[in-house]
Image (cartoon, rainbow, N blue to C red; front, side, top):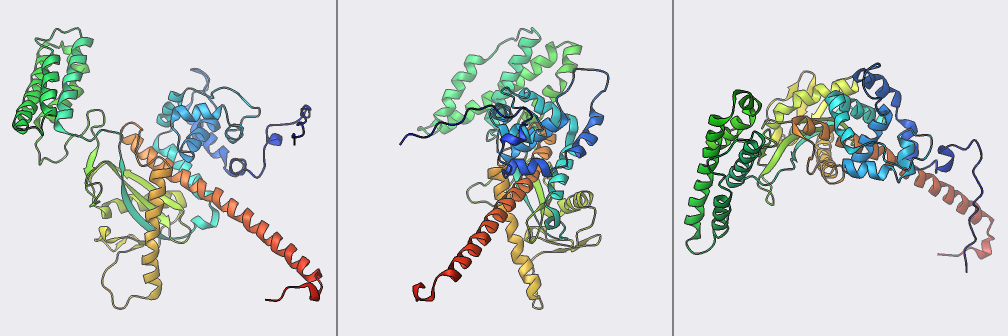
Length: 442
């Protein structure tokens, strides 16, 4: 059977974009619940009223950041999908459908830099507010995890070869003629290193690795000799970084694992499938009953878990306007038992433990799947944002996106529950009108 043709009549003259949408859609509801005026007021100070090119609307840029994290998209994919999705456009505050990209992907990078960590924290605060009474708990659970950086698995050989390549690039930029480029030599040494598992190959590979390190040091010293004073000032940071990499030993602290992300640290969390993780440490606080994320901070140092708590609790006070009463933690936080007026609870032998406290210790484990969702669904499994500032921004944006998603899921379950109540009510009425003789017996 052929389908009936759709009506192609024109919409009313006064029809708006909102009239064309499903008003029960999650993004439609979320767009009307977020207080966009808060962002307009807070971020307007970052713009000049007289100079420069007219900027994109603040609501548009904030909504792109939220949607990017909520849908687990890159900057490029976000601006591309925005031009195809009418709900994304309504969420961003546009009045008509716009079949073109809202901005260049790099403008999102500039906007993140412009508002900084304070601006991203404001987005997290709004995501907590929108959860209402569920975020008002003062009994919390806490835990830390590693946010891995988008770098290759670090080895000395990789770092030395990158130093050689960057030295050659600096020489080409500054028009310096090197005594020898070593391109063919490094290529031959790489082939020797690839044959490490052959008979007698291990010894040859180790000698080739030492030769690569020697070449890298030779090029760094040659550049320092031949660069002019101005050029040396321009490249001093890079050359000093190369020197630190060449000088570091196996058991040194504060080692450099990446040339383009030198702040990356190595963490050992005792995982069987992943012995080492390279990135930064993220600390989270969630409410015990509802699971709203009320604290999210990033740390670039290799701190003990208990050392991260004071700053996270301070952030909790900023975002929620009150102190936490109790925080339940795992054994990795062993140490202080209270910070200011907040009591810290870690599992320890206690014959007089109450049933309530035992339940709260068990409930603490609910933070583990929250961290799992943050990593796999909200772009925290691998951070692609640049620098330590990018680490902090990504952690807070991921937490805010998960809070927004929690509200969306609540609306869906409430809608299903209301439909079930209506269905049960109608079934009950129908059952009462059936004659007794016709009712089935069980």
